[in-house]
Length: 113
Image (cartoon, rainbow, N blue to C red; front, side, top):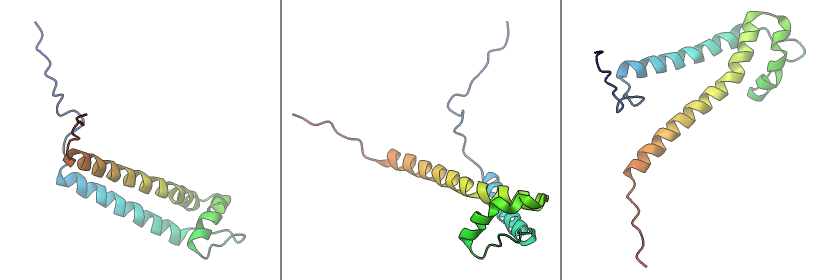
C-alpha cells in the first residue's frame, strides 16, 4: 500500500514572500538600471543618428546594431524591454492593490423591493 500524497491546496501559489525575496528583487532592479547606464555610456552611436534627448534615444536606437558590436545590440534590447518590464511591474502592483481593496470592501446588500 503506497503512502498517501498530501496536497497543501491552501498554500499552492499563495505563499507569502519573505524579506530575502524582496531584497533580491530590488537588487536585481538596481542591477538592471546600472546595466543600462553602463550600456548607454559605452555604446557607439552611428554618426547618422546621434541622440541629443530622451525621445531621440528611442528614435536612433534602431541604428545601433549597424556597428555589429555586442554593447550596441544589448543597449537596443535594454531600451525596448525596459518599458515593458516597468509596465508589467505596474500592472502587478495595481492588481495586488485592487485585490486588497476588494477584500476590504463592504459587501453589497440586496435591495428589498
